[in-house]
Length: 559
View 1 (cartoon, rainbow, N blue to C red):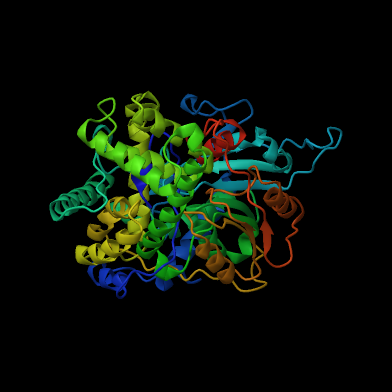
View 2 (cartoon, rainbow, N blue to C red):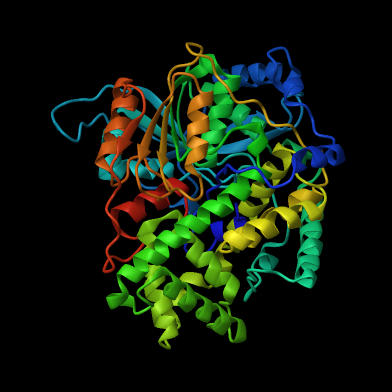
C-alpha cells in the first residue's frame, strides 16, 4: 500500500493485503535468496526462544501492571482518559536485553446503558484496538466511546489504544529527516519512462539505507510477529487472562497472527476490513492486488461524479470525469497550485476517495472548482502539511520496516517492472505509485522473515468475527474470504456492494448489530451473513465531517 497517501493532508493510515499473484512466477522466492530470510517455523514454535521470551515478558508485565495517569499534554486527551506505558523486549529471544516502551491509553468502561439510563452495565474487560498501517497509532482510540454507535461497547469495556513499536512515542523509527519527507510538488506519471524509473530506484535505495542508518541495528525486530508478541505482553499488563481485540486493515493480520501464536489467549476478536493472510500474499503480491482493486473503486467514484454532473459539471460519464481529472493533472504539472500541489499531491488526495466514499463530495468539488479557476479547495485538501511532517515520516518508516521485514520481496527491479507494467495497462490509477512506496523493500539492508502460516483449528480458539465490504479497494474482498477459511469457526459479515474501508460500528446498522451481539453477548450469526450497503454520499455533504468522519479520525488517531 502506498504510504505517501496515508499521510496526505486528508488522510489516515491503513494498510491492506490484496489477492492476485504477479504474472510470471514467484518473485518472492527470488528475493528470499538475496535477503537470507529467517524461517517463521524456527521462531514461532512453542519451544522457540521467542516463545519463551514472550512468557517471561508477559509474566513481568502482569506483575508490574500499567500505572495509568494523566496523558501527555500533546495528546489533548479528554477528561477520563488515562495514559501509561508497558515495557517489551526489542528481541524476544533475549528478554533480558534491550527493551522498548510502548505508550498505552485507556478510557474505563462507563457502565451506562445508552438504551436504559437506570441500568448499570457490568464490565467485561478491556477491548484493545489496533488501527492498522502498519505505522498508525491507536492512542486516540478511547475517544471513540462518545460516538453513539460505540456507546454500548464503551459501557461494557475499557477502551484501550496503544502506539505499536516504532510508532511515536513508542521508540519511534525514522528513515529520513522529517523536513525532507515532503517534496512538493511531485509528478505522478501513469506510464513512467526508463529515466524516471532509474531515478526512483536510486531514491528507494537511499531510503532503505537511511532506515538502517537512522534506526540502528534493532531495525530487523520491527515486524508483525513481534507486534503480535507485544500484544500478548500488553494483555498481561492489563491484567486480562484472555484478549478481546478489534483490528482494522493491517490490524486484522496482526489479530490473525495473534490467534495463531496464542490461541488459548483469545477471548473475542473482531477483524474489520480483513486483509489476505496467505503467506504467498505477504506483501509483494498483496500490493499488486490492491492496485487492481483501487482501479475498480476509482471507477465507482468517477461513475458517482458523473451521476451528479448537474452539481459538478465534470462530465456525464466516468470516461468524461477521467478526462477532467487528466486535464487537471496536466495543468498542475505545468503550474503547481499554490506552489505546492502537483500531480502527485492530486493523486494522493483522490486516492483517499478509494478508501472512504464520504470523501467523494469534497474531492469532486475541489476538482470542479480547480478546473473553473479556483484552486483554493484543492490546495486545502492536497497541500503537504509541514506541521505533520514528523508524524508522517515516522509512520512511513514503520510501514516500510514492518512490510520489508515481514517477508521476501523481489530483489531484481526487472520483476517489479514486468509485473507492474502489465498491471498498469488495465489499472493505471494506483499501480506505479504503489510500486514507488514499496520499492525500498527490494533493497532492504536487513534479513527478512518468511511469513507465518496463519491458521487456527476448530475449538482451539474462540470463533472470530470478520467484517468486509465487497468493493473495498485497500483490503480486497478475496482476502476476507481467505481469512475466514484460515480461522476455523469464524464468521464473515459482508457489506454488499459497498467499498468504504472500515465497516464496523459506522453508519450500517445491520453490521453494527452483529458487532454488538458478538462483543456484548458472544453471539455470532450462523454461517456467513450479508448486509445491504450504506447509502451513497450526497453531493451536498462535506466529506470527512459529521459522525462517520469523526468516528474514523478517532479510530485512526489522525486528524
